[in-house]
Length: 163
Length: 417
Image 1 (cartoon, rainbow over the protein chains, first blue to last red):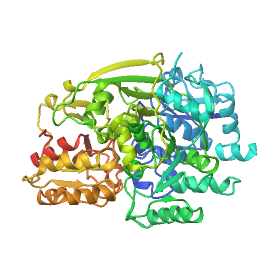
Image 2: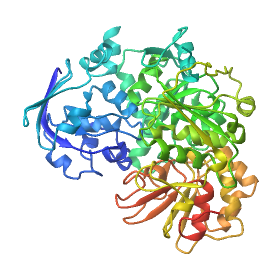
Image 3: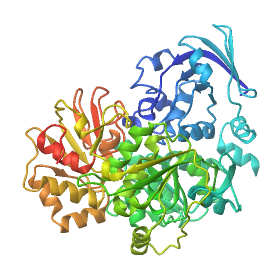
Image 4: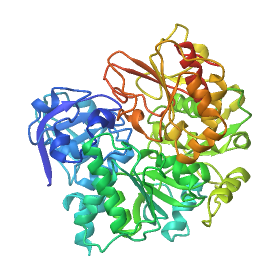
């Protein structure tokens, strides 16, 4: 996947993994089942409105809290193509890369994008375009080896390819 | 330019003379940890890799602790998956119900974590082992899978914040108050991607259990790890619990820190984190109005150790919890449970109207054993007070020390002994 394009769901600071996928659903590890409860404790409407390709934009420290990989898995399985935030919590950042969910750090984009905007992200260059508002932001492009992991759609494929 | 404690450990495990903040490295792992929530996902991922088995059956720890004893059929299936994987691969350190405990209390007690180790665990509170001078950090299930398969993990070498601890904490001020004070000061992302390095003569006034609590909550400030230099008390702990070889690392004189703080422990007061973030802290003196509560939980990887139970029992001895209060005490491991029984602590809890549970993470993450209804309030010695963490999205969690939790159970409102 080289780029993402979709409608934006917008959230604030410190969106934690407990609201992304509440622990009461962690007795399952099935992505499709987890997706049914994605963002449930912060936005009950999310799962009803999200369409394949949509983009989540948030403020600082997105994904803080638990190390549950179920959080990026739920987001990816819900159809989200990219998460943009001012900053990410570090375990969420690793997990997203490792499962092949593209994420981009960009404080300017996080401030300049609103819910419902149409946004396009180019992963090679890190360029984020707000099509609705006609604005453009430079996000952080991934270091080369992270790009390879994302291109392989996750760490497991990347390790298998390396052999 | 010198290196921090964390950087020295990482350099040694990457086969490098020197590393600096921001550098990407691949490090050898001394231990890879998983629990009943994260391991099933890791096992599934590992099965997709073209590998024969695990890299070293002695260097993997599998601890079902979150939803055990199995809370429902789905949890039972997860535990079964972990158990079968452990047997199939001859994993030495698989801990079944009856020998298990909450992972971050259990592994140091079993001697599996020592100074100088590099440890990853598919649980965010893996940072706990920094209390012994190890580099340990939480990762997700895929990193755990790759770690189990290859014995290696990639890291971005972190920068660091130095916390110089001086002075001696007053009575009823514990490791929990110190770390809540720090998180209140720097915020839930104050140490994002960084090491939190604790130094200074004040450390000698902290018990090992205090240090485990402090390192445990480094993640609540966004930290990659929290770490203490291994002093005499840490060495004594390791000698008592472990046969593993340990290596003590201290930061270079000219190590670079992004920020430095000095904290006088004698000035700290019992501290409580209000809903819904661990950074929303107030000291007991700043609370003002009465905050009535419905439940108290004393336990977890943060505060379910023997010192914690001793303090709670001291407060509860000869008293009774308030009418309508549910007070749930959860010793973190079987050994702590046994010791608490021998010291008469469990009797004190039960006589005070509390219940005592087998080790489990249960209520801390809203799994089971103490879920909150709409509008209910809980004082908990656990580590997160996010929206819905322990139950209904309109319930409230107040994070506190075992002393404050026990006193609150008696008073029916947030209180200090």
